[in-house]
Image (cartoon, rainbow, N blue to C red; front, side, top):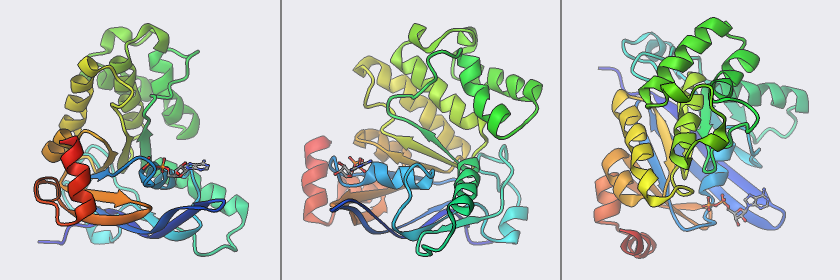
Length: 278
Ligand code: ADP
């Protein structure tokens, strides 16, 4: 059997905001179809990592590779980002160690990165003046230049899947937070990314709305989407993630299988954090 190819490979990612060093050499690899949960105290750098994987932040050093990293993997059966639904794109590497990359080239690289990784935000970030359907099709039609009729059909079927078929013409303000977040997830799926990124997807929701959203994410994990999830929901991480990465102060303190890191953490800082939240 072929070794499982990483869809995401992060090496030595570093980032400072002024004098505040937020990431100190982060390494991360996510194999195809696997789910990695990033956990850790507020301010430890989790969101900055996610934003770097989507070009919303530009790291000071390190590299990010997203996509099929060998031709054998690209040709392999069932090798799509989401259970064969998403065709693979060849690997793309952004090398932030090379400061000589011109701005224009970097902008092109970032656009290509966004073609491969899609983000679900804590506060949904839907366009308030657009309907649900318009929100979902905007990226695929305007940015990816895919045929509108096909994108609309796919969007409708994705909305039906998360129980929002009848909300296609509603505006975000007419929806509950949980419904808005499900639109946020559909919007990310409609981009057919290699990698799904979730930034605390339920932390802005009222408690009674959290489970519906987590159930959708769990289903996507079972379908074989490759995902990185920043979350404080440790019970959810234990059920859904293959690997848990605990961060503190801009470094990875501990990582391993979800059951191990969450049930039997080895490092003191992880023990204290997990004890507080579980
Ligand atoms: P976490 O997601 O673990 O809570 P973040 O990645 O959001 O951590 O933030 C890490 C640190 O980086 C925090 O100290 C935060 O204040 C700082 N930070 C994040 N984004 C910015 C920014 N755009 N400008 C300045 N500081 C930032």
